[in-house]
Image (cartoon, rainbow, N blue to C red; front, side):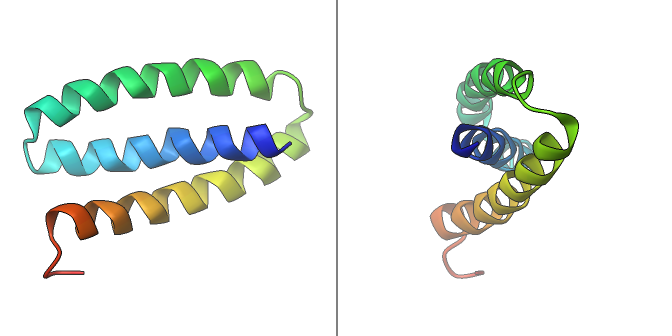
Length: 84
């Protein structure tokens, strides 16, 4: 289950980071993050298929929440240190 949590975290972290990249027109970062998102998507699909629906929702939801919060926080620390 810890792999499902980690994969969910990474996938949503990358999605949040990508949203900020697009919002701020960081073209090279958009390309790099897009490739990482493809790998994360594939990995998550492979992992989810091994768990039942309730486990996938609970563990995935926890990873998703943490991933999005961390992505916004880290993005702001890296690119907007005076605003966070």
